[in-house]
Length: 308
Image (tube, rainbow, N blue to C red; front, side):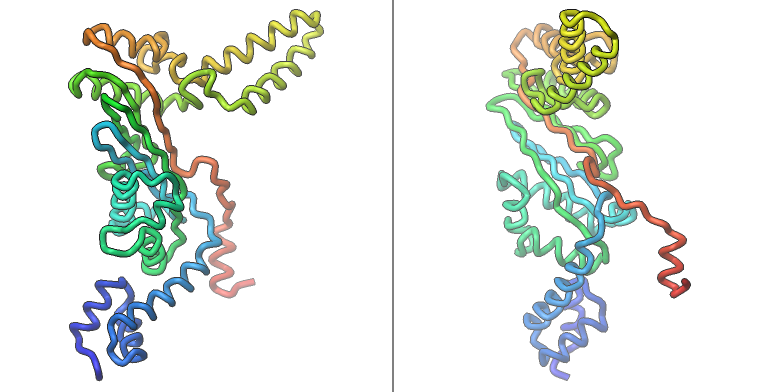
């Protein structure tokens, strides 16, 4: 035998592979640990490729901030069980911090960035897929920044510090201190988590969404049989209400259901004797937009058991 028990232990710690797999790899490579790592990684890549077709709609959202900058990242898994796994949570936490530290612009850049243990983020994710046994995907990220002031994070349904189901960042531009901005930002973030705004202002709303709402309103107005000029006013009113209800600054604060968010910010600025501007926000909800597969558990069990 060209290797020792310590070599097997070292290989297991480096790769997360099982003991027998590690021994087999060392046998095949004549005890060369680096070659054994590569051999196990190759097998891991094959396993990951096989799993990549499965729908990954569970997982975690991670948030990380540092003063005037923040980032929110979504990493998906197939089951909520994996989202509770310490290895998975550690990956999401570290990948989110890498995104913040490197200011990566998109998911592809994050995948190529260096992970703390020396691999790339994608290498680490691929290794996790092989060792945990489920498809996992780095799905999306968003940065939020201010020139001066504070980016305030909030995690709804937190699974651990900075990890959970709905992650929110609020960017407040202001010379005010954290004693003013942090509580204000947290209240607004909680509102965002609950109210799900689609844009900061009405002008920022997706034109396609506005066009769709206008078409729906026009169809409803046409059914009323009212004169064309009245129908036009009905349509304009419906579109204006849609914009008001879905733009953050015009939404009514969920705490009192009567004060627009813009006025909440203005009141806080007046009380602090300075300027505060809500310039940006981010809201990631886990699995948002992913079409989950409908599964028949009984059928899956029967298929696994070879029962027809």
